[in-house]
Image 1 (cartoon, one colour):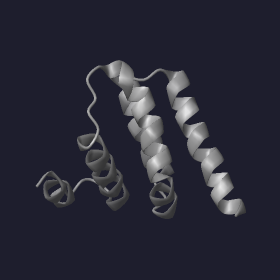
Image 2 (cartoon, helix red, strand yellow):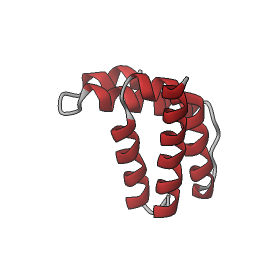
Image 3 (cartoon, rainbow, N blue to C red):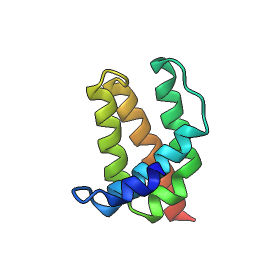
Image 4 (spheres, one colour):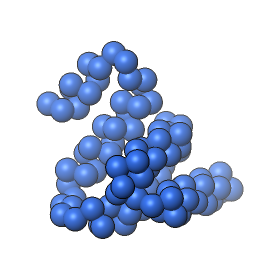
Length: 97
């Protein structure tokens, strides 16, 4: 239901919708209680969805999402850097294979 509503939004790009659909599906299947768990969940999300994120060109959307979490005080700037680094290293590994 939420995914359907997400795709009905008109002021959101297709990439934003795709990223949020992947994130929402992931987060619904993983129980998160405190905000302190979010940095690890972000890393786990990146590692478990790396191929999809790369194939759909969602790096920028990932970065924006991480920045939104920073803006809400859930992630630190170090967490953002660390997560983007994880994405970039795995992206480089994928391209070299």
